[in-house]
Image (cartoon, rainbow, N blue to C red; front, side, top):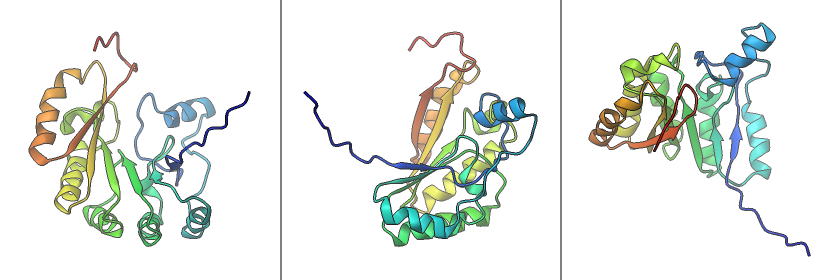
Length: 196
């Protein structure tokens, strides 16, 4: 007997650009560079027209995230956020890279104030570059605080490694002080053991 089960649409993850400034050691992007002896990931930026076509068929949540990129580097990103707002879509943005100016973030937050932003900062902001090479963690933390002060729902994503495990309580207290939800992710990357 065959049972058909309706699967709830939980979300569509969009890799909207081929660019990122980070060189995280275990990232698929870094692995791709090594395998192909290049510093360029193929692909183009998602355009506003392409997103509008997607939204004609996809009614669920949209997540702008990347396995090989960071969404903030899509040259149309602020326009994409506005389109999701106009089309009443639930939106999440997952970012860890830096390379945009403060006024750009303000425009992005205002483009869709209901978007939920998750900032990947692994450890205390001043040490986060130990894994996320080229990240300016203190600047990204400041942008997370700006979002929070503007009423944007924010999360602090913290991947747990052997080197940053000892900073978890300190960072959790920092997040609580500013009313930011903390999301810890257990990783086996660089871990001898994680007995929790």
